[in-house]
Length: 309
Image (cartoon, rainbow, N blue to C red; front, side, top):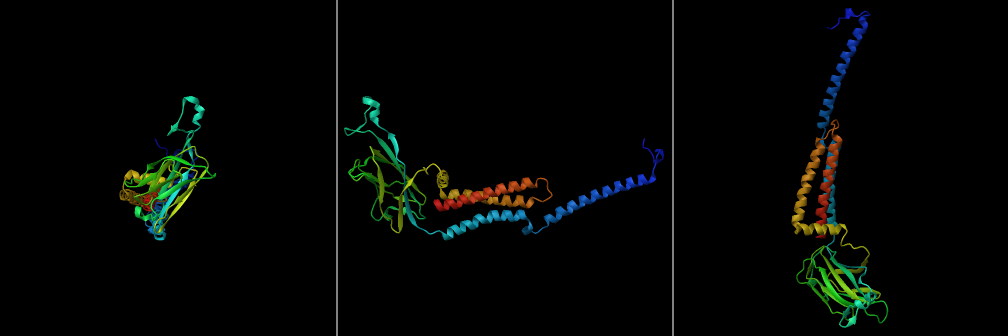
């Protein structure tokens, strides 16, 4: 049973009036706060799109890679260029005589003590495809030059490990030739193509490597010594591997173009839907940034494919 104000022994009419007035005032403030929240949300949504920071971020995330691709394409000069790299000599068999009389390695009745391998990397580092006819003086000649007079570098075998899908390239060498030379003539090296050649040496001494060859309206760079095997690591290798997976340059660019468009539109949509008074705003912005980064990654892949392939 509810009590009336007369039931209180120490009834104070002013006290009850103030309590009632305070309660009513609190309710009014709560209603006013709710109204202001709704008005704030409405005004934020009615802001011009260019005054919303999330929209600016999304637009910048889309436009910057596109502008970068245009500038790269505009300022890149078409050139024919071949780069030749070689890696540190790799011993395969060292001092076979250490095995005693039980093991003996011979070639044409000549005992062999050491067999080593030198890896060569020949790649089209220019912007244009290079055909067989572009080599003015014929094949590209690679020679081992001994650093000690009267020494001879014996080439036992030369193998094409990766020929970039060519069918008619020519690799020529004569085992134990006096000039310690082998030659290579590609049939067609597209932009970004990589050719791997292994040369096997018998009992090698100290040497240097020289290259002879000319490209019409182009240059041959090298030989360059590389301490780190760039065949396994590197951004360019990643792009080439991605291209090999799709097996088609335009299929790769089409797939990543679709990913770019979908993620760019999704990123803009998420930023537009986020408002300052929404509880999950931070989460939505994080999602928008993540999808925006995927969009940027996609356009970078497309640009890199157009450059390297």
